[in-house]
Length: 141
Image 1 (cartoon, helix red, strand yellow):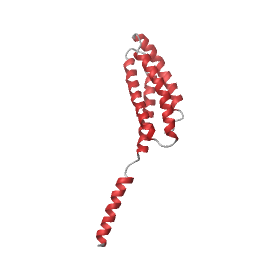
Image 2 (cartoon, helix red, strand yellow):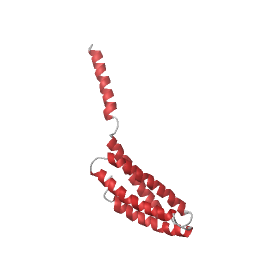
Image 3 (cartoon, helix red, strand yellow):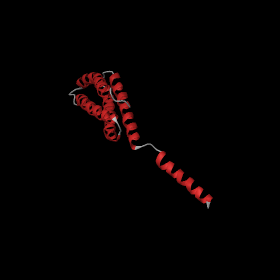
């Protein structure tokens, strides 16, 4: 009888540990997702900033902007589940930076000519680097 009780107690302890302590909370996952996205935004901004203004760079810029947009969506979707002051930091930074990305993307994609797109690209990297720094400087992932 004692052996059966001990076996049952051990089995319950193993199940409890697997169910409760084995994984991370949804807040931890949200923070990880948001912070990874913030880091990738920085990578994409650096890629934009490093592009040389050539007609071929326009496609590379569009690709980077698409990735930034996806990362901003990840931050937007994850931030509500983040705990503490980081939640508000992420939401504010994401909102501020999203508007700048939208303006830059429109200036590149709506350019009337390749020359105009290249000119917009020249300004995009620097503008987004400054905007990123202003928006995400206070975010502490």
